[in-house]
Every structure is written in C-alpha cells, then in structure tokens.
Amino acid sequence: MSEQTTVTISKNVSASVHFDYHPPEAMVLYPAESAYPGCAAEVEILSVEIDGVDILCYLNTDAVEQLEKKALASFDLIE
Image 1: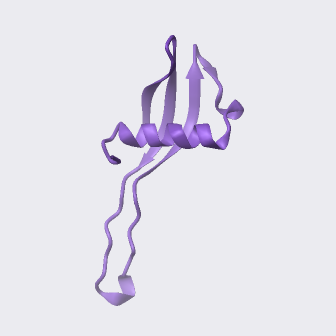
Image 2: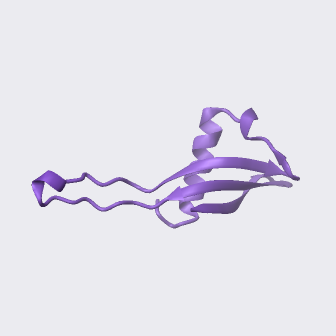
C-alpha cells in the first residue's frame, strides 16, 4: 500500500517521503507443515521530494534507514 509522510530535514526544509508499507504478518505454529515465523512491518522508500525534486538517489544508506524508521513511526509501529 503506497503512503506518504512529511519529515523535517532542517529548520526550513521539509521533504515528502513516498513509500510502500508492508504490514506485519502474524506467526503461525500449527499445523506444522504450514508453520510460518511471521514478519515485522516494513517500508520501502519510493521517493524523497523537496520542492518536487526527487533526491532519493543522492541519499546514503543511513539517511534512507532513518527515513524508513520515521515512515514506520507514522504508523505508530515502533517505539
């Protein structure tokens, strides 16, 4: 499901973050042949726009991970 959130980068700069949200999946224990460990919620950043310009390709891995955490936080899924 595609979503969007706005994050503040600095005092005067905000970015619009577009991402796909994948909800958590519950663990299934029985029957044994259908057991599934489940998985946590996750997001995939699609674009990061400032004034309509996508800057995602210029961000390093750490910056993208921080944006992913903020995107998940917008769903109140992480503390």
